[in-house]
Image 1 (cartoon, rainbow, N blue to C red):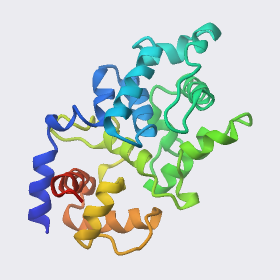
Image 2 (cartoon, rainbow, N blue to C red; image 1 turned 60 degrees about the horizontal axis):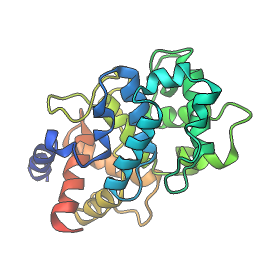
Image 3 (cartoon, rainbow, N blue to C red; image 1 turned 90 degrees about the vertical axis):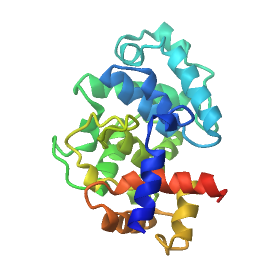
Image 4 (cartoon, one colour; image 1 turned 90 degrees about the horizontal axis):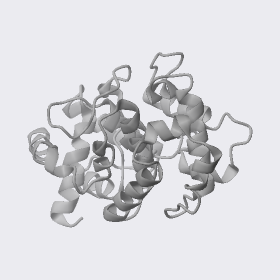
Length: 250
């Protein structure tokens, strides 16, 4: 199993993967905060066809004037009007305006979004980080209730696919050029594998998932099995499982 999945991970974890994947969106930028911001949006908006996801993220970047961090920190009320009408699936401009508000408040205090996943700058566990992030994100008493569905948390037993994917992008560090590895306080050994439909199907066919439902406990089960294959970098197999599903039409 290890040699098989290592080979698949090696095949798909390369720069040719970027073009048709939502990670292509933060790759459009070179600045650290720009990559964090657009990576976060690309992950949050990552449901549906990848082509549509990428197009909507590029539209959003355009609305930010192709300078996401500068827009977040320096926008005027008039600038915010340029965000009205943006929508992808159930994510709309009400959600977008709150996301912008949160990011401005956060970056006014910290240089990196990584701090929102830490306990006073310290990493405890992936579960703690995801719970802490969701609580921090919605700490404002005026946070729209409708927006809560867009940021998953283990407290609701969600598999947290989108946030786990975002963490993979920011934390994993290798020489393949796909993931960014710009965060260094969250160990890649502690990351949880994102479970989308493709990963779920491939993992079940290989016996890496036994739970009937797909939830937080399933994400832990899958990652635990992957950690047996590579304790230092279990989520590299996200590439293998995703690629296997596409390759075999699963």
